[in-house]
Image 1 (cartoon, rainbow over the protein chains, first blue to last red):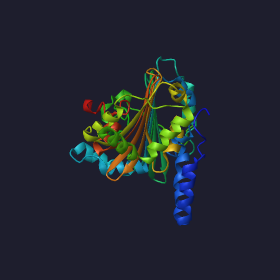
Image 2 (tube, each protein chain N blue to C red):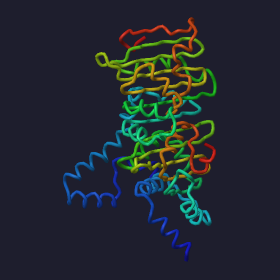
Image 3 (cartoon, each protein chain N blue to C red):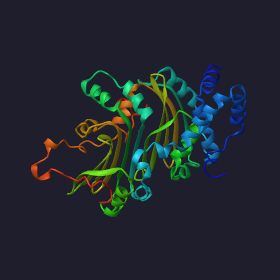
Image 4 (spheres, one colour):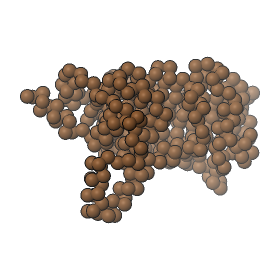
Length: 217
Length: 157
């Protein structure tokens, strides 16, 4: 047989083991089934807002792809166990414990024509409802910054940074203020410099906020 | 006799998730562990003298057969996750067409540490590794996802 066994196949040993377990405690068995089924579908759920985006074309075009997936349980674990021996780490720890997910996808390309603006536009359109553009920067590098609000609370950010040889997608879910985003640079594969504090920008480079209420720009 | 005893001990201590993935890789891709002379000794030495931050190291080297197909599998991460079972999450996935290398790291909390399953796949060889790591190693991986500090590279970070 080529390829893996189907994801829902169980080999005889695991079937027998599961049957014995079920007989001893039905409630525990039901819980086990939930935990067993959940990981088979967890990939889509664990990519946050990026779950809705078809990245197949970019995956084929990229010479290198780096994916970092930190769902809530992983973040909680990391927040508890990060070393406490320096101020920067403590600040980061305090910040990330309020987050529900950090999802980073970085695509590197061998040449500047490997992906098109239309590929990036397609990503923006697929983010789904509720995302509004907050910042747009155009130049050698194009950066789009989207925010999702529930009432007056910010529930997440999506950053799309398109450089000639690299495309970076960052989705941060949870309670975080825009000015805190720079604290995450360098963590979980988030490129440094991608969230530049406003004070570092020249007047002619201050991004123009765009809050159009939809992603189809 | 001592070597046989050590090798048996290593086999008995293998994590069940790791064993399940290895079985899946062997069945699905006809991967075969390399028969490297003295590998049992190397594994025992690693267990006795672990790299700082890493413990419970278990690994299997695969020979060339089946690796190309494995490397080309699009949804390999989803399939590995299905084999690992509950509690595991995809953590870091690196896929380099230029280097023809894939590194898949899955994580599972284990008390105050974290279990990692790491699959490194190149055209000519592959390694499947199970390790339990300290928090600092988790942070190091998050700081350097493109070149995760695996046991052979830990001293470089």
